[in-house]
Image (tube, rainbow, N blue to C red; front, side, top):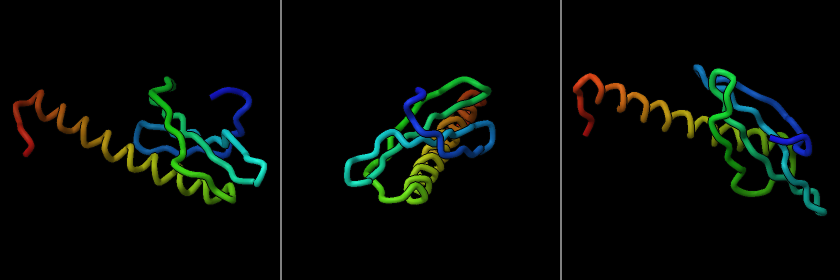
Length: 91
């Protein structure tokens, strides 16, 4: 993310690190944010909040939930690929 975004925290899950940012504050005080996804020090992607929030805590909670959902789907995808490499199949 760039210097214009306000860093509000980070958390780790396995080898993934999720950096949380406020990216926009409206005139009414609503905020939106983004997550930068890193693995082994390299940025793997980003995604934005889906909606606007009144407090930084609400935004942080939302971004963490989205990051955890993303991580679960990514872990499942990696498990399927690893199993396929070993001849297993998932239905």
